[in-house]
Length: 271
Image 1 (tube, rainbow, N blue to C red):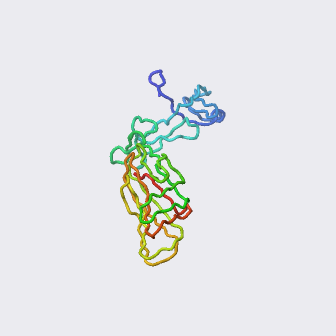
Image 2 (cartoon, rainbow, N blue to C red):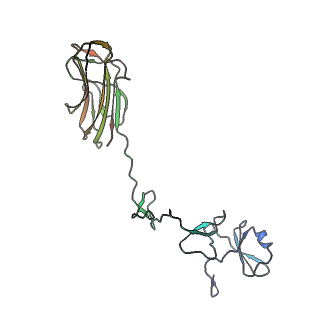
Image 3 (cartoon, rainbow, N blue to C red):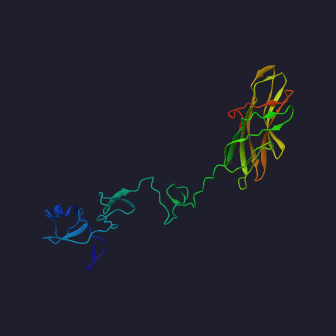
């Protein structure tokens, strides 16, 4: 479009092809404009010859002679230089803000489902906190005394939270307070059990009984491997600790089975 003798914006392009094909066209009206895809040049026809000018540049885009307000603009061909009227926006189109911070979260703005806004920094996913230990040492469990189980073999311990030995314990790490799932299993070596004898598996918090997660009383005399297993959720603040204890009243000390597959504890932060 011209305003007086000054060209305003890019003239409408009637022909898009290679320069040779455009120059070979017949019946071209004086003043027609074209875009040569092979040389990236715009040209104008004076009624006798084509005059070619500077290319469109890497970012310049030429639109159609006209379009409908609020219609979608689509690329016209594969040059990246031409666009066309793509018709009315579809029902799923979403309008974003005038600006946003790279990497921030996009959230709906209102209840229309058509507007989004900058929702701020994407929340980070907390790193896993927990530990898993086992024992194959065949620890001796005293008669009629809740004994701390020494799970001496580490499988993983994200924060070095476990102290092994006779005073085995898991201590909640600094800055990692919350709800923890405790899942545990122990198994005694094969022994003769008499009717009425008991096995209990318990969780202690700070040296005080917190939860009896398994209790079994034998109804008849038998010789077997006996196990106890259970789980519970406990709220721990930084510095608070738990341990696992097992009780049996067979009449003498009994050894745990020497296999870590059957004697293990897993502690996982879940909230």
